Image (tube, rainbow over all chains, first blue to last red; front, top):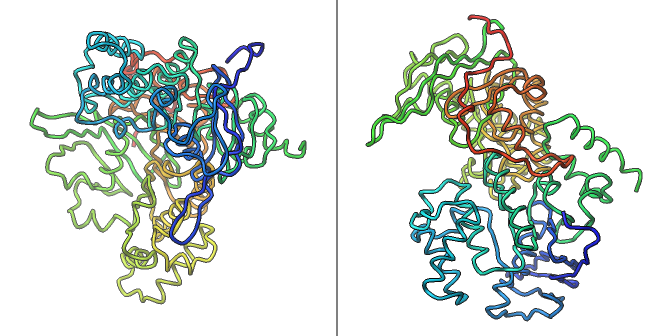
Length: 276
Length: 292
């Protein structure tokens, strides 16, 4: 958690952004009038089910496509529709399935190198040591540089994906369901790594997920999306103890839980609807 | 418990490969009583799904598979059955629901054709019209509004949750004694998953169907199952009634599994040690095993 007293400087801001996709016969409004800002060093969770607009939002934050209307700001400066290299370097992505996000024909070292090559970071020799340092940072042995993704376990692959995102020293990481494909023990270890990295390197996270139990333990604030609209935004504690929105409550009600304390909390949340 | 619907005794499985025999199951013993909902919980690669496939008699067809141990279904020794006899069991007296409902349905036939195929396994002389009527009543059981419309549709025209209901209705169409559900609804949204799970639970309770519920999701297991087997690297490490197992897990592996699940009450991300030797400790049984 970040210090509540610390000055909250918005590093990334979205002002009234919308995205409409045009099909031959109809239009799809994937995101509608979203306002949000992410403070430096915070972890903002984006929560919602499929079709809620989570991934559309991520793609726009990353500059893969611009919003149809509205504007985005990085460090207070307006982001252009087409971003140059330094702007792209500032925001990096970790995807859900490392098996499809890592090139199977490239060694781990080559995958990490590509990020350094593209962004022209360091000399030949420096890149070599940087790759070793990156693997070390995510808790993998340096020998892994010569291996292929197929020779790694799911958790190890996801660590590589994280290392690649960190390669070009971004300010912000967009994490799109980074642990949903992992087994529960592995998920806990990868989440812990992500949490550690954020504090050690003063990173800012936009954490996209449908798993509210994960959100509770890693995020500072939560934005809940339903069919392209941000229906609720609050700090994590409030979302879980006193959610203001019916959809948020139904999401909390649907989480599979394993302890009696959780059951009690879920019950209070579901019964509290009269309070609003 | 007397006369279980299914019992596995010291079930072993290996696969013949170029590098020799790879052992996958190291002696699984498990039983499911009549009308009981039993969960098999474990991580990927632990042997959950191959166990299900052996029960259905699907792995027996595979030349590379080496299976030993006893499998009794409704009093009969499954290993003694011929391929044809095993095939006759599937879809009639035992059936299965898979993880991703949309890809388990055939995309080139409308739902009603697939229903008819299932129903005809029990009644060769079933007419088109009778089949339709049966299908409509089965879809009504799983709370599908406008079943007539759904029956004319193709799987890709329906939502994931709708397809899952169709799969549940189809799996229960011939009133099987045993339903095997392998990670049902994992591919669905949480709210939809919760709904369909409740629906499936109510339905099997009403019909008295026994269920083998395979999952890696402890929370889902806790809400669904009467009894739980925890599987790790091809061995059952702990087994007991759901309440006992969740309130007092004893095996180091089960404890680690429980600890690793993030809680909605907070408390941070748990610190999980690397896979430890202790995970292979002897099995803990919360019940006194009654010899069959």
